[in-house]
Length: 366
Image (cartoon, rainbow, N blue to C red; front, side, top):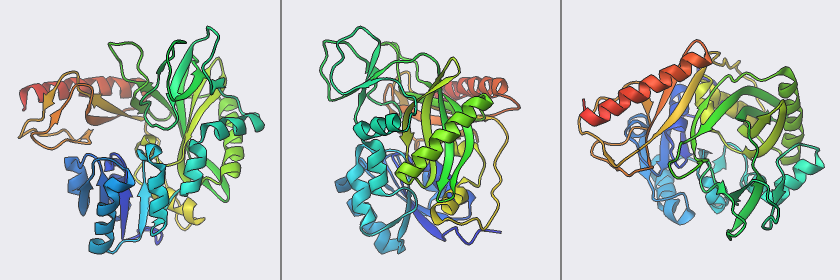
């Protein structure tokens, strides 16, 4: 039986909305989407999809107005891509009920000066950061003030100038934790291991994939839970969020909080939207089951310019599918793949197998 918390129809806004659209549909909710790709599977699942050039307010204003006039909606859920356009959330908040973190909360978490100062005040470990160019010879990363998916992160040379901040590079396991926050506290959904895309021009930090149900020690779980309790209390986070961190020699180093539904949410079952709705409304009207099956999500980037075959039959495990005839430039995402398995090793083996199958399909068009 569908929960009374699930609206009849929602607006979702994200750079790529397919995952949120899928979560809505799986929960019995119709959806209208605004995103930058209008992939074929997004269009098939959504009542209507509006493609926009970016998530800047000037680029989405007309689509948002159309959704209100045509569909009569007043509630929305947002995903990734608004990090670069925080003013968009503020504009939306004037006329829409946002199911998730408020614009003010989202922007506070994005404020790097404030975020790392708060980590220090809460005795939460993080890599050293600098807001002026470092003078030492340590290995530093240069990070943009706002961004998502590792875009714009690069190794720092002391002779370069950039508008951003510096963070000490730490070798270790790149991890995240998916959690749901409410007035009642924090529930850890799962730990994940993530990896970056390979690059011929040097080390890349561009997000490529993430695997669920990562193994971490009880001490790490306990420490992360304690940190999140403090951070949720300070920021007033609500709903599904994630936190990125590095794990090295048994110690965790916080990198950032993603104050919105993240890519890992699609790896924990078909009821995560209900978790989000419950947390945002401080309700527990239905028990929500989570998937215990290890799985992984990976973006497939084009190694060369690709034209999507007109009659390509996509495998079920391929998502974020571009439209027939679309041209994908080198380095741009073609689609994504999702793999499952009995354990993490089998999941990764399946991912590699799927990549080979997909490369052959794109090459032959069959």
